[in-house]
Image 1 (cartoon, rainbow over the protein chains, first blue to last red):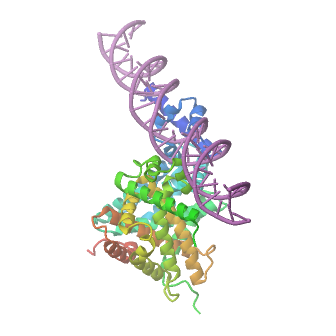
Image 2: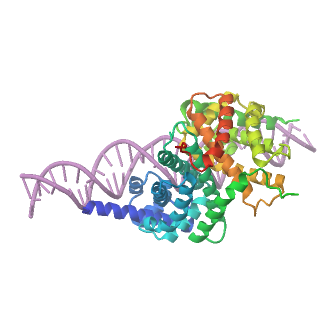
Image 3: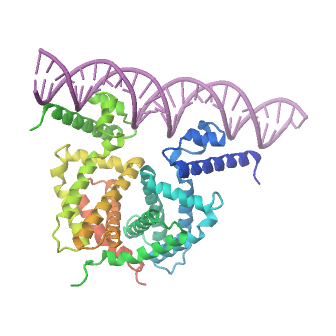
Length: 209
Length: 209
DNA sequence: ACGCTAATGTCAGCCCCTGACAGTTGACAA
DNA sequence: TTGTCAACTGTCAGGGGCTGACATTAGCGT
């Protein structure tokens, strides 16, 4: 069971996270001050920095949950699937099962809105992209292990996840720029874009004349 | 011709840039203070911020030149090439002709070392990735125009450059983590990785049993 | 030579973040 | 229960990035 001290810590951290995301999604990330977050929870600014290494980390706490969820989904794919099939199924399925992981901390809607903030804040988008390649590194190792190849020597795992990740990023970007912010819209867009990769890399796009 | 005032401004900006890159590559980006850069040129800190919007921009001034160089190279590719051929040729050729653009401001060696700094500084790497997708957006429009498709409706241009960019990023990363920092090493690695994309996306990687 | 404008320096201040120190509160054993 | 110890928190001082306001300097055109 959980000691009182641990419960308090947990509550403070959750409260800080919720206050931060709430403020980020309403007034914007840059316009939100760490002091404001701390004040909303009635702790000192110093305490905020004891729970989060920086302001950015508070903005990515939810993303971190979602990313771990996705990596886990890939890990559990049946071994007979090809690498790309596994990635595709994991991400499509992941969008549906995400609420199991995320909704435990904040409403799913807030997570989606926070994602919009990340996409529309240059500095956060930058960090998001860097975090993505960290996730890709881990995925590359997972796939390499699955297929029994050497993750250090063979460039194929790294290239496969990089290409896959690139498609996902384009999809996310398009989704956040559109007007349907539903999960199902995201699912359909992902499937459609993945199907377009082949044609996009084909010889030429000009209609046969 | 150039007025005295303009010459002075140009010299100050170049001096600031050179001092910044010099310091970044020797003591590291985070360890370098804007005050130090300004002191090295004997101007006030305030003046630095009048020439560069921020510390980061000074770190990417060289990258900006190189990126523009590459986009231009794609634009000038003969129209009979397929999109991917054009991108491939432009980037391979770009590595050789880069000195024409970059070496005018700083020694090419300094540019390469600065690139190492970007790759090894998390915050700079993040910004670099975001800048990359900006470049991709522009490239997608170039390709769309080339092939006569609609850049807004047809997802193929965006997907093609995203995939291509992903491969380049993996290549750059591998190059900066290796021990041969020569241009030719970069060229060969790029060609090799581009050739591996097909196999990486193929059905499976397991050796036929 | 002189007024005008652009470039620079100085100053004050906000915000992110950190180390140091002191005060408070929960944990655990006597 | 009580007292000790460790963990958590608040306060303070300060560094570093960045900006607006204002005064000062220096190049420009007449």
